[in-house]
Length: 190
Image (cartoon, rainbow, N blue to C red):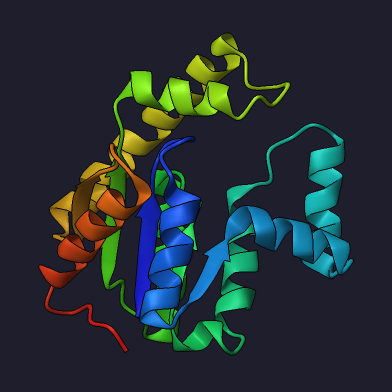
């Protein structure tokens, strides 16, 4: 089972991903966590990623794809996982398709958490992080929207996308996520 979670900053994606993984008995593969762990382990891919980050560059798509590929080969990820933060663009989705095909793994479901922009801004400002200014938040949300729209269309056309209302309490959103999964016959609890 492979589930992809897509949502803008502040959508509650991390919280919902943790709850869903616990419920389904699958691993949570966050590309941010994966990058940090690979860099800390000083693995070959981590050294390359660290170099990009030190130069203030984005980690190239292929490097992230290679890290995801290495992780998916490891137990317990090989038995099923939820991808959080990847893919972020259409090119990453296409690269993911290639590596999944080579491993004979299919995508079970793509879940999009939709949250109204005023709610996202309120949630992000409430975190009180120094880099969470109104200007930077609006910029991050715009970048997310620009990168993600083609990705959502890509998965929608393949019949894999379910959009979930991410407004409300954590429990309300969790119930909606469960309902979205229950409506897909190819995703079930372990």
